[in-house]
Image (tube, rainbow, N blue to C red; front, side, top):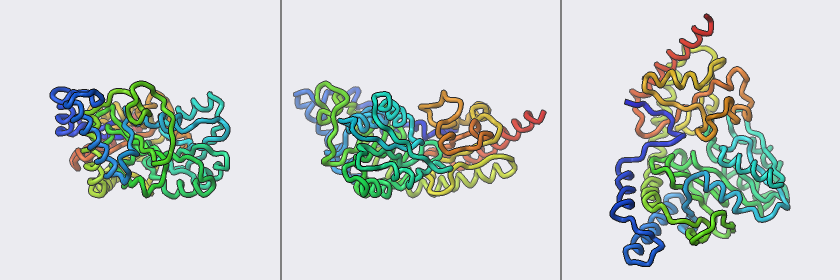
Length: 378
C-alpha cells in the first residue's frame, strides 16, 4: 500500500469523478461546438458546470474561463492582460514557477519587472510589495498560498492596498494551492484574476480555470475556433470540466473539517521528531493546514525522500515543477540558513490520508533522519 503525502504535486482522482470523466470519452463524446442536438446537450453540460463552479467560488458564470490547468491559466492572465510595455509589473520573489518563469519571459521581452521580498516563512512582505506599486504599474501578481511553505497571504488586503495606490493596476493571484484548502470567495478577495487547477483537488489533470472579473479585458494567447469567448480556443475537455464542477464545491465544503484533521496530523509529526536534532518547520502561522514544510540541517531532502520510499511513503521536496533544481528558489527567497537549504521536505495531506498513515510517516521520518545523522558522524 502506498502512503501518499505529496498532494501539493497532484492528487488521486475521486472514483466517481473518474467514472464521470470516462462517460465523456465514450457515451457522451460529442463536440460541444458542433451543430447536432447531441452536441447541444454537451454544450449545455459545459454551461451548467461553469455555473456550478462560479457559484461555489462567489463569482459569475461569465467570469470563469476553462484552461488546461494552472500553468495555462497563469500564462493567459499575465500575457493576456499586458498590451503595452509602458509601465511596470510587480511580482513576489516566491511565486510558483508557472508565474515566476512567465514573468521572467516578460523581462526578456523588455518589460520593467519589480520583485518584492518575502518574509522568512514565505509570506509576502506586504509593505515591500506595495512600495513597488506606482502610477505606472500595469500588473501586480501575488499568490494566495505559497506552494512550498504553505504560507497563506492576505489577498484581500494586498489587493486593496494595490488598488488604493493605482486603481488601474490589474491584480492577479495564483490560487492553485488555495482552492479546496483554505476558504475562497472570489468576490470578497477582490482580485481581477485568479487561477486554480483540478488535479490539486481530486479532479483530472488537464483542466483548470482562470477567473476574470467582469470588466477586465484580456487579449487571447491561443487562437483558433473561438471557444471560451475567444480567449482560449480549442475543443473543450468536457469530462474534466463537468468533473471539476463536482470537485470544486466538494472540496470547498470540506475545508474546515480537513483543516482540523490536518492540524492533528502535523502535531503527530512534530511529536515524532522531538528526538531529532537540527530541524525546523518553515511556516507556523497563517499557514495552510494541508502543507507542512520541514527543513533538516546538513541533509539532502532528496535522500530522505528516497529512504522513505522503502516504506512505500511518498513525500515531496518542493514544487514538482522545479524539482530538478538542487536548491529551491523559495528557500533562497525566504533566506533559509545554508545548512538547511538542501534539506527541505514538503508533506502535503489529502482527505485520503489516515492517522495511522501519518503515525507511520512520523516514525519512519524520525528513524531515517537519525540514521543519516549517525552515518554522517561516522
